[in-house]
Length: 187
Image (tube, rainbow, N blue to C red; front, side, top):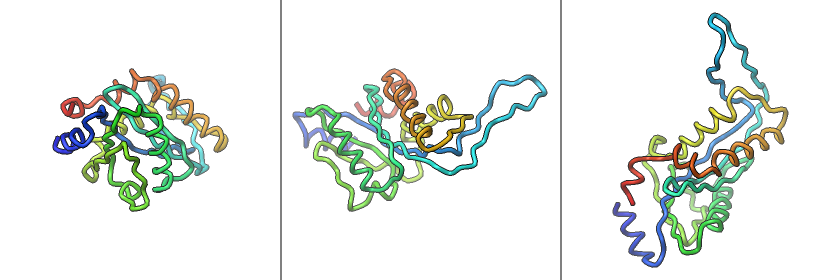
């Protein structure tokens, strides 16, 4: 709350929006989940042996249901800086973003370029349960990526884009999946 008060007093003419950011690796070694099957039978699940993957960097605002995402073959402070630049271009000019994220090395790097209309708040270490974007990754894995294989990197990329557009760009899904009681108490 102290951080929010400081940000509000530093930016009195701007609306403050609280966003959460995280990244997820999505690859050909997909998630195996439970499936419906006849009692006593043993359903088969396809399994890929290739090791190609990509990263989805995403941020959500649980209050509005808005989200911003970027696909990347790798993740480092340069890619995160690019994401932040893209992110701030998509946010209204009268908004100051309070962005909460974990303490991954590329989040705390000196090379990271933080836009002027953004304040970063680090979540405590080893606390993914405090980041509602983790719920979105779980939703995408269970609803779109589980029990599937992808022929090549392009198919993988298209599946990631398709899942993001169907789920993360649906504001009602984001509000539902990323709702957190403590985030609402902040406002």
